[in-house]
Each structure stands twice: as C-alpha cells, then as structure tokens.
Image (cartoon, rainbow over all chains, first blue to last red; front, side, top):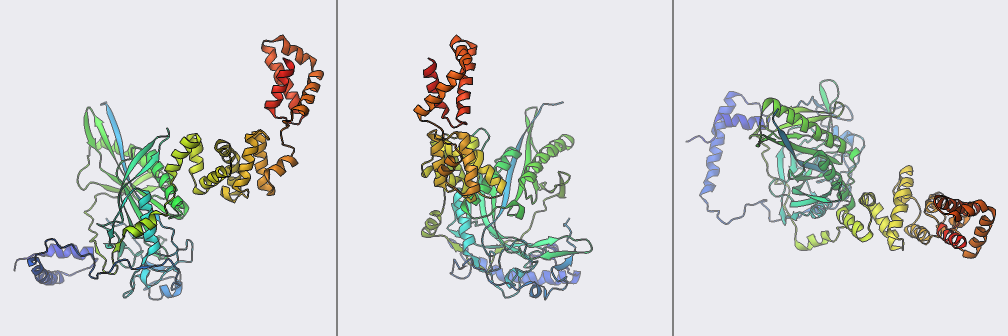
Length: 99
Length: 487
C-alpha cells in the first residue's frame, strides 16, 4: 500500500484541529486515514466530465426565515452548561495571539 | 542620497454590519449594549443538533448593497465553513462564503477634492456571520459574550486602487453614505458597525528601478481617523524600512499589524503569513441561494438615488457648489428634505443657503436631523420664496427660520410679527427718502460734487433710509428711488 498520508500530514491536520496526539496515535491514524483515502479514491474511476460540482446533497435552495425576533435563552440558561462562568460571561483560558 | 520616489497602493476590506432585527442564522435579537449572553440560542451557541436558517432580509440587503456597488449579483451562491479556533465562535467555524460570493466585480466612485471622481474597483462582497466578543480581563481568563456572535456582516473587498490615506478615508465615508442611503446598515462607527482592514504597500522608484515593499495588513480599525492615520504611519514606516533593510515583497512575507490608538503607531502581530489553512468546505447545514431575475428585479426596484448621482445632479441641475452639494448629500434625510423643499416651489440656491447656513446649524445644536426641526418643506419653500422676491431680506430669512423652529409658526406670520417685511411700496418709501434728503443737505451736496465723496454720501443716505424704516426697506427699491431723486 503506497502511503498517501504520512505522519507529518497527520501532525499538521491534528494541529489545525487542535488535537494533541501521541506518537502511537499518529501512527495509528496514518494507517486508518490511508485506508479511508484508498476507499474514497475509487470514486476517481467515475467519469465526472460535464458534471457540475454539487454544493449541497439536497436539490433544495432558498430556505429562508423572516427577520422576526425569537426569544433567546437568556443569560442564565446560556451559561448553564459552561465549564466555567461568572454569571454574566463564559470564562475561558486567557486568549493569546498565536505565534 | 539617491533620488527616491514612491507610490502608495492600498486595498481595503470593510465589514459592514447589516441593519436587521435578528441574527444571520437564528432569531436572536441584535441588541447593542444588552446584558451579556442574553441574546443567545442553541444555534449561535453551536449546540449539536441545532440548524441555522438564513435571514432573508440580510440576503436582500446584501444584494441591494451589491447592486449599489455596481456588482454582478451571482445567480447561485452557497455557504462555506471557515475553520476558526477562538471561543467567541463556539462552533469552531465561521459561516462565510468562499468561492461563490453573492456579489462580484463592482466599483465605487469616490468624490475627490477638486470635484472630480475616481473609480475604485470592488473585487467582491459576501455575507458572513460575526464572532462574539472576547473581553481580555486581568487574571488568567478571558470573558466571552456571545450576543454579537452570528450578526450578519457584509464583507466588501476592493482592489488596491487607492493611492493615499485620504482616498481610503473618502472611500470609507462614501461607503458609509451609500449603505445608510440604502438603509441596509446604520453604519454607526461608535457601535462598530463598520470595521476596516487596509492592505498597504509602496512601489519605490529609485534611480529608474522599481521596488515593491512587503504588504502589511492592518487589522480591525473602527474609525475613519484610525484608518487614515494608520495608513499614513505605514507609508513612512515602510519607506524607512526599505531604506534600511532593502526587503522587497515576495511570496509569504506579508505581515499583519495592529493599530495602537494611544501611541498612534502600528504594531507587528504576525510576521509571516503562514499559508493560512482555513479548510473551507461547503456547509452541509445550509442550502444554496439562487437569485432569479424576478427576485433580482424586485430588489432592484428598492434602489434609491445614491449620493454619487445626487452630487452630479445638484451640480449640473441646480448649479450648486461642490461644498454645498457635499453638505446636502451627506445624509439621505437632508437630501430628501432639500428636494421636497424645491418640489414645493423653493428656488434651489436660495433653499440651499437657508438649509446649509442656518437649518443644519440649528439641527446640529439640537442634536437632531433637519427633518426633525419642525418646519415642513412647504414652510421652508415659502420662506425661500419670500426671500427670493425680496419680500424679506436674506438675513431676515435666517432669523425667521430660527423663530419658526422655536415657535412652530409659519414664515409669513413671523415676518409680520417681527416686522421683517421689507417695504417695497414705492409711495411710502418715496416719502421717507424725501424726508432723509431734506434733513441731510450736506450729504446731498457731497453727492452732487461727484468723485470719491459721491459714493460715500449715497451710502450714507441709503443707510438713513434703512434706519428710518428699521431695516425693513427693500434696499434695491429704496436705492432706485434715491438715485431718481438725486439725479
């Protein structure tokens, strides 16, 4: 099986997804991802010439709502599931500009 | 020292908050200054199982703005997810439009100081959702308010067609006027309704050779002043930096800077544009938007005359000065009021003078729009007519307008009450002139002597007539009578 996804790509994707993976996991996922790509690659055998790329799987468009106010949850309910909060705001670890 | 010349290139990204009642994809109210996290629902919280639904008004506002910016409106547009890892958007992506924006290839005409116009190309305009607000409080945590998360934003991107900070500011101000005229945004700078990100670099010409400095993007500016000052700062900084380092524009050396409003300097935020991997992909939760001709025409019919066209029309049709035209077209309400007054029979130049010299001053002093001062367009038209026919003097017109605002009375009633109707009755004025001539024989003699003294003496005699009538004599008619008698 030729490797389409190597460990460095797994690391990059993990970083973009903010996932902290161990070396063993990186190995494991590289194998699994390759299997997935191989499977999906079978689609390349299909002739898609002249077929418009599909933007959505349903043949539906223009599903709108009117600009009418609906009741929101309110602060208390909004914060109810937060790991940390101070009654008004969500509390999160200090945000630092990424370098 | 080598001969150095440079040209500034600036392109601008502008985020405009749309004037809808509710958010882009849910029914939460847009309420500036509301209690933190009180306008939040499962959709803008990014709860599993919740589904976004498009706000039709926001889509129509965007199309309207796109039309006003002379863009092609896409007949098919879709939604994409843009990877985003900050807690102010809990879904971990922003819903935006990537490869199929709502509007493309437009332009905006900006007024230059000399009265001419410059065309700035618009690359694209697309709809997206705003993030919430992170408050960076002291200590080891940040506070997050999601009230703003999901607010509809129109992102407008221009080509790098502007060549000075002043031009960029003019474009931003013109855009503010356009979206306000259309009613698609309140464009209130204080509330962050317009945010700017200029991309700036220089083409430096040195001994016949051209060098381009690396592009700098200044993030998140929310005032016209900061926009203009940050660009002027960058021009100097980039030219100095080039002189010292000789670093030129190349792939990947674009940097991002922030604006320190207190120190009035830009501050480096991110040195190298790491090939940003936003991992855009079509949002499966939202179906595409198709704009057919019927819908597009329906939206087109809501377009109004824009400031650009008004300026040209006021100049050519009414012969007004660039300055006056600028004042009258600054707000749609003012322009409409001006036009209504003309429609009611006011002479354009006269109406313009009354409105710009006193009307807007009164409105500013009261902190209201000219339309809220009280007097109707028809009242102002009558006032203008009275001044136009010399029934009252131009100064009296200003006094009367002020009293109209104070008392709510009509112009004629006030003119009479304040004794500001000019005496144009020849018989009555003749008697007064006769009396003045009789009592001022020295001045009459001076006049007859001719030369320098003559003009002075005439002025004195006319002054006496005005004094006797307490300024109510029509100066033109009084002068004619005086000249006839002195001849």
